Length: 141
Image (cartoon, rainbow, N blue to C red; front, side, top):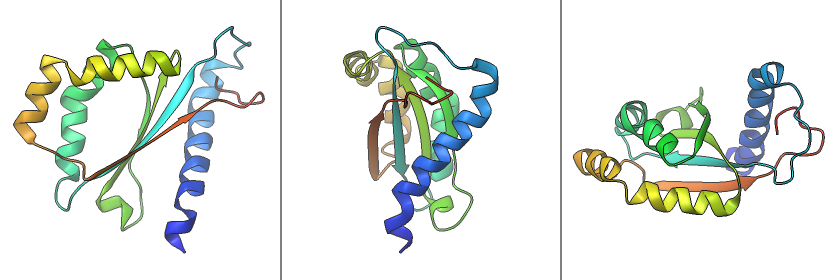
């Protein structure tokens, strides 16, 4: 039953936290000609590798994302086991799906990323990515 509820709970949590944390600071943004898109990413780390994954994001990945036009919105760690032992969830924003594809391509080919990832090796056994768009009533757009 926990697995069946997982996507719904994660989307609800991300929406609630993003709105609660960022909504008051940003206010409601008026409609734009090409609204931003958000990318919700969930990483599952092999046993014993989650701390290394967080360290690589902290020391390298966020900076490299920003370098390639990705906006770091928020990073989460689940509070309850078993997800708290293997899972990292984060939200990026992009100007468009096309921009996201170009940013990811540049990221994968970045020499700093190649160096950082070669030093630690693979730290995620599974990566899930979902592109999202805000609703018309969302405080964060």
